Length: 105
Image (cartoon, rainbow, N blue to C red; front, side):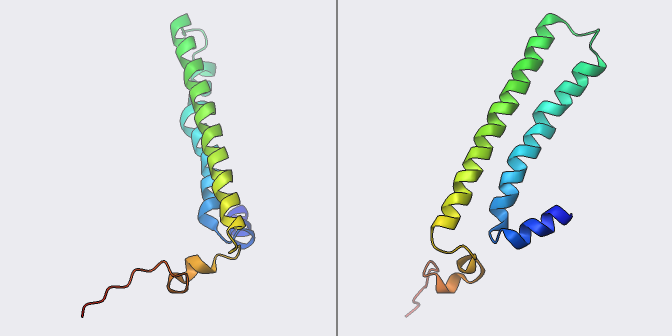
């Protein structure tokens, strides 16, 4: 919780920071760690085919996590290079010129 609070203070565009952390942690929790724990618990019962399948799943998780991590880094770098590092355009969209106005007359 302290890490999240510190991240919110340091990184004004907190959603991009959460994307970065999630790309690393969620792929590990969903793809990598369960398979590795299962392999460790049932090491004697695994067939060669299942071991290969598990290795493919771990590699898939690592590749997807790496791609997601790199994409999140790119988005974070773009956000800070666009000239609004404090995120004021996100907090007040009316000043950014992106709001759509509808003329009912």
